Image 1 (tube, rainbow, N blue to C red):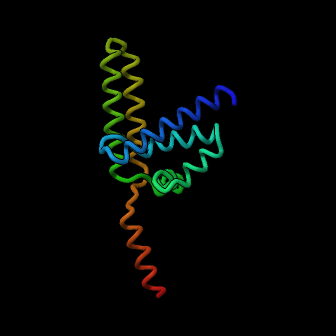
Image 2: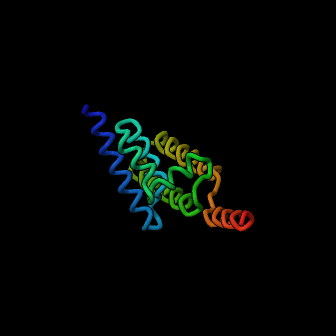
Image 3: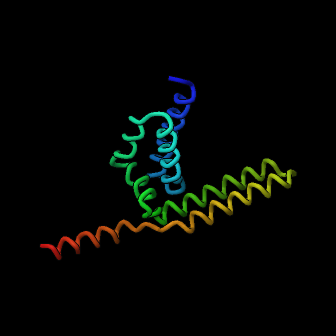
Length: 138
């Protein structure tokens, strides 16, 4: 195995860990970390990638995003909060470099706009639709 694949598998595993933590801690994003893990695994290990997509806890987050269902409101809010907190800390540490501050703000604004434009997924509505469809066919 080459170094690049080993690094991507390691990074993917770290992102899976962070994503799982995000399932339980309200301010830690889940979907973003799992998408990063899926990307790393897709570039390094088909076995890990398949495992992640079919995992009963993690797979739904990735599939909802990939299928165009979007992200839950909780995931969006926590992701935006973490994004702005980390950008704020970064700006604090590089204060004095005006162009870096502008670049970080532009990135934060761009990612925030992207996240807000994503469809908001409401799993409870989908389960209600499925149960009413099942009632109609019965």
